Image (cartoon, rainbow, N blue to C red; front, side, top):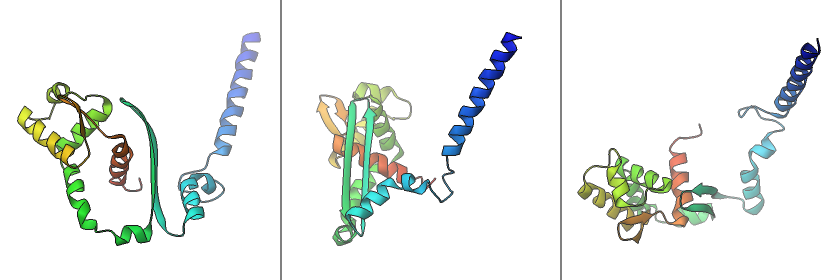
Length: 168
């Protein structure tokens, strides 16, 4: 009898907690009271400028924590020669290079580690891709046969990858 009462009390407590959690949650697609918290970055940007773009990130990588942000005005972006970004973006437009960057970000920074990973190709192909990534600033040599992603490139890289997924 006491055991039944204990189980009933525990069940009632769990039910109360679930209801409290669900009451505070809003659907990502439903407008309403939750929007203020949902669009906190956008609201902060609008307080600082009428027209601009900001991106930021705080990530814990195998090499350590990285925190980075940048904000640019719309006019500043429109005044740039977008064609100058083609080479840097092109360096990322290769499946092997993206896999290399992902592996390096996960902690595989030695050529030996990278070359043993599946799908990296021959050592010559690997060095070709490494050289392209270094030439465009996505990687930097950190010693003989070792590479790392510069801290100021980690968040922009992740933002580019996130942007390829659209709003989903």
